[in-house]
Image 1 (spheres, protein in one colour):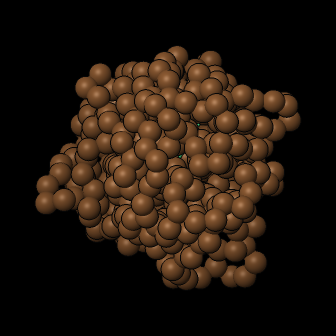
Image 2 (spheres, helix red, strand yellow; image 1 turned 180 degrees about the horizontal axis):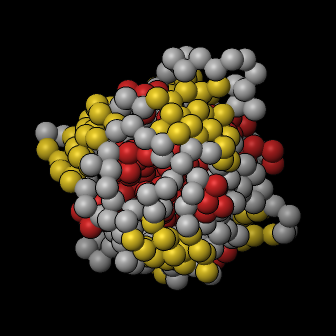
Amino acid sequence: MRHITIAGGRPLYGQIKIQGSKNAVLPVLTSCILGEGICRIENCPRISDVEVTLRLLESVGCRVIRRENMVAVDASQITCCRIPEREASCIRSSILFLGALTGRCRTASLPFPGGCAIGARPVDLHVASFEKLGVRFEGNRRIEADGRELCGAKVTLPFPSVGATENIILASVLAPGETLIQNAAREPEIDELCGFLNLRGAKTTRRKDGSIRIEGVRKLRPVSYSMKPDRIVAGTYLLAAAAAGGRIRLQGVSLSGLESLAAVLQRIGVQIREGNGSCELASDGRIQALPYLETAPYPGFPTDLQSPLLAVLAGAAGESLIREKIFENRFRVVPELVKMGAEIKTEKDCVKIYGNRHMHGADVMATDLRSGAALVAAGLAAPGTTKVGGLAYIERGYENICRDLRQLGADISLSDGSRKENPRKA
Ligand code: EPZ
């Protein structure tokens, strides 16, 4: 079985560039459906969620060209508004085809989305918001949308859902009238999507109260755009270095979008600073416990960094408590960390971590994207050899975690499980 092998207990030193943002590029690529012509997206991460999205774009008639980290999407011809079950049901962001196809063609047919099994992840907020925009739904096995009456409206989200906010924007950009999204999600990826759409001629505005106003336009023009760095990948590596110790610099990354992580790193005794377009972390590997932290919508602590933080606190001196308030099943990394010597108790939406200095290498298995990254971080800090299986999860969001961490001095390699491991293999 393919797995990552880590010889842990060594500090990390060095600097790396951070890949383009997964959670920004997925809505940006999907939004290409909204207009004719060829959009060139640079710094597009080579991750499996992007590959699935490109295949879905082709299934509705887009022409797609990929050259390394550049993707060109030509959406001049949309020949089909029905996306196939198989691929759409393995990623969460396929739900965004609802907004893009309804916005462009006034109709959409898609399966319920997939994604990491971190909770039920319903789409009720998407459907309810679209009904406010005049979209009618039928059937219950798939999402069948009739957008012939699509029209801008005021939509108030009961919860600042990232995906629902993005979907409403996609449906509203070309809709007649004006849409106002109240209690919209504030994640930076949404403002990057709006920036891309405005470059194309859309009229979206983030207002002072956090709401988003979209004035419908008649058409969009094709543009070239380069994705910003992935703040969750950056945060993952910062946490890994905090636990392993050492000094790392992330080129092209500012702490904007990671303010809550920077505050947590200070609280656990790790130095973090930014300047000259990069951020730098120094740690002696001795982590202080965190009496209490809860995840929250941006600008709160991101749920996507909860598992990597949990892995770091497992080796801290003292007791920490984390409350996961976004997803109801996001502690699946716990049993795997316990195999590495962690002492953790889960109770409803909280985990109590009795940090100790006896973490050690073990054979562990990723159960979702961020739990996989968390196990790699734990393996870097824990003395001994750690083997992490379930790579398909990690490869959904990390372009090449072994390449990145090896550049920071980690003894880490990918083995396909069949032949003798070659620790220096690429
Ligand atoms: C996006 O998921 C991200 N995925 C997630 O990242 C991220 O964890 C999440 O936002 C929160 O920041 C992408 O951008 C592709 P939500 P999304 O709608 O849009 C509930 C990663 O690891 N909800 O803000 O699905 C939902 O069940 C992934 O990169 C409803 O109840 O998140 C959850 O409890 C994981 N009904 C909460 O809201 C709905 O209709 C947050 O969901 C929609 C959501």
